[in-house]
Structure formats: structure tokens, C-alpha cells
Length: 290
Image: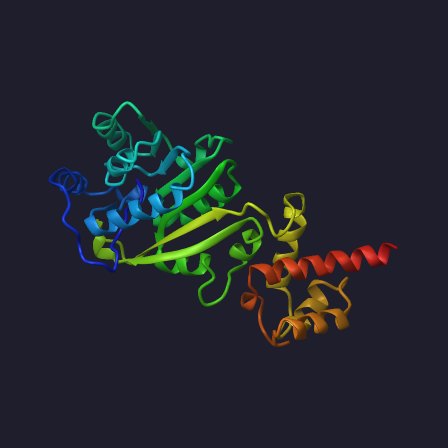
């Protein structure tokens, strides 16, 4: 079902025989049509679990695993003693795994894109199918309830979501409500079958204090879209057409105040800068209505 997780930069630690056996059992060929690349590297599995523990230690929220596969992550996750639900699209994998899990673990045969995500607090963990990464991320970002997510995706996707080398439109559109962090690169050799690209482990966390009110999500995201797709060489000119309601003098003052070059592109802005720029638009609109 889903592409599974890779390899940390640290040496392999000594692991109990039972954990090595779990990894070995997961080395079945994945089904190409389901985007199955199972995580088999013990160090990569340990990195994912350690990342989950680091986040989930702040709460006792249940865990939901996206793409449980043959249990490379499911079995170590259930040892954390949390209620755990594994969602697996491959019926054969789901049936095998259900026979190997304990009573506190529930295995659901189904597609996460159709899965009813609870509105109560929970933590998401997933080795996402590389060919469905964008759809999965959009589904997650729109889903209620979850507080943190630990996700394995393509390396370049993980970098872009975390804003490394500049933000993408998708990241900028969700930054006011979520924080994105790049954890580690995971080599392609950590998966079976081996994918054509490396993986990247990333986290997403819901902000306790949004940078933009939730009620303004749609106008904010429309604003970001207009700026990213606006014409012009640099933010000074782009904003003149994408946000004509903000006076040019205010745009230039804001750019100088934040030490942003007029020729900078939208991807150069950070999370707080996007929120401030949207707020500047709102203040201009309120003044015009007075």
C-alpha cells in the first residue's frame, strides 16, 4: 500500500530479535499499482518511532497509521501502549496484519483518502505512497482532530513542505495553522521494492495559536494563490497586480521594514511574513471602509 520508511544518519543500534523479525516479515514485494514500497531498514524504523515518541510524549492521544502495510511500523507503534488504528488499502496485508496485532490495535481495510478521520485529538503516522503524496497531504491538512503528524514522503517533497530553499504555494497556504519540519533524509535502499528516489521524514504540527484566524482561511489561501501566480519581476510589482488594495507605498514600507528586496519572489517569504502581508491587506481594506 504505502511507501515505507527509511534510514537515519546514525549507526544501527542493537535491537531485540523480535523487532528484527518484524522487519524481515515486511520484506514482501509491494504491489506497484498501490504504490507499495515497504520500509525494511531497522534504523529508519527506529527513527520514525523515536520521532513519534518525541511528539506524542506531549499527550496521550491515540495513533492513526496511514498505510500499515505488513506492520513494519505498526508493531513497534503498538508497543508504545497507545490506542492504535492502522489503515491499509491492500486487503491481503490488512488481514495478515490483523492476525499479528494486539487487542488495543485496530486494522482497517480501506483507503485513507476515504477514511473517516475522528474530530478528537490524535497523532498521524504514515509512510505515504509516493504517487499519491500530494493528495494525501491535502487530505491530512483538511482533516480535523489531529495534533501532530509524522510522515515519510519523497525527499524533495519533504524539503519543499518544510520550506527548505523557499516555500511552495501549498506550504504558504497552510502555514498560518500548521508548522512543518524536516527531520531526516531516508535512502531509497531502506525500502522494498526500492523506489527511484530517496524518502524524507517530516513532521507537521497544528499551531495552538494560528497566525491567521481560521475563519479567514479561504480569503488567505486565495490571496497566497494570487501572489504566487501574479505577474511581475519581484514582490513589489507582483503585489501591485495581485493585491491592488494594498497601497504601493505600504508595500514598499513593509518590504523595507522586513529587509525583503523588492525583487524577491513569493517563495522567499516565511510563515509570519505571509500572515503579516495578509494582515496588511486587511488593514488597508478597513481604512478604505471608514
